[in-house]
Image 1: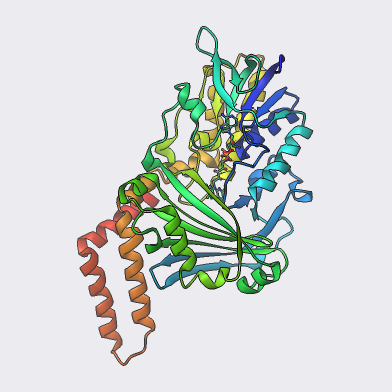
Image 2 (image 1 turned 180 degrees about the horizontal axis):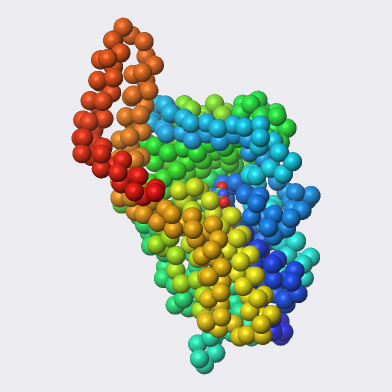
Length: 435
Ligand SMILES: Cc1cc2nc3c(=O)[nH]c(=O)nc-3n(C[C@H](O)[C@H](O)[C@H](O)COP(=O)(O)OP(=O)(O)OC[C@H]3O[C@@H](n4cnc5c(N)ncnc54)[C@H](O)[C@@H]3O)c2cc1C
């Protein structure tokens, strides 16, 4: 198919692969990017909030032509039980700035745009091409790839694995282990279409302003999980995800959870009358710092979801993907500039640079959080949401009960549900994991 030898082959045209390919191609490296989808983005699923700062570091003027939906001026965090939500809400006119910080996007459109930039930077991009195998030298160094297209192997000094969370290629090659069921969430998502003026009216938005809701509680039926609702221009993305290990244990169905979320009294009016046009399901790496596999070796580096770089606590993934892709590209450029071979010792530069970035620092900060949440999911996703709702309702309902008795009833309900020591231990463990 292609006889040439490249400086770098990038496997995958998602956020991380595009960031890596763009970074290297724009600095003059010969780059081949291979994507199994019909077009970049055709296979990719995201909520999707895109974090501008990380894209700006790659393409500073992206706002000129990137397909952006709404810039976010409001975020709602909800703790839900079956009939209520207890919320925290932040909205600021400061987010109506010249260069907004977060946007909703639709990945199928966004990835196509990003890929166009990659081509314009000089990379060769081939879609409908699945990389089936990594090619190695006698010493074990990765020296190229084989694909499902006719023809022999394609060679490169270095292969960037940007193949997403499943990472089948890296796993098959023995470069990493299959992610564990307790380290990945399965998320399902729907796109609900509504006229833009209806969305603006329902969420109190003007023009391109956007609002997002992130919700946890009894909607995930005591599994560790999160639901979301994001406003696009003329659609609402809505979804829910829980750990694969929890789904396996409880035998709950993701579709049922999504239906319950959509039919919740707090959500139903927001999507009323919408037309559902798209449905998708995808995995999300949620193991945090402790689940990060080996990131580099002789002739290869792993970036983005393929390297499990996802901050589930802050619900960030695409920005870690773009940043790790960019940093991998920069490390490769630097090694090439020194005329050094792309061997493990030199590619360690990628890890050194990544360790200094927010990507690893953030994941390190919350390294104990995934285990804490996952092993206490019943308390965090069932018991406490129910107690919070009871406490709020007790506080608000005016029924002649003296306030002192109401306060005692609330305290008694918490102690009955978790005991004094249970409560203290939950607070201490949460504080320790958060510190
Ligand atoms: C439901 C959901 C909601 C999310 N919401 C958000 C959000 O709001 N904000 C956020 O920042 N992150 C979010 N994320 C996470 C975010 O989507 C990921 O972190 C991000 O897409 C990772 O980018 P990536 O390039 O590493 O992987 P991907 O985007 O998955 O790209 C991998 C690419 O590799 C290709 N590929 C795989 N194997 C091969 C092969 N063998 N040969 C050729 N090509 C191959 C795939 O087709 C794909 O195009 C969400 C994820 C999900 C599932």
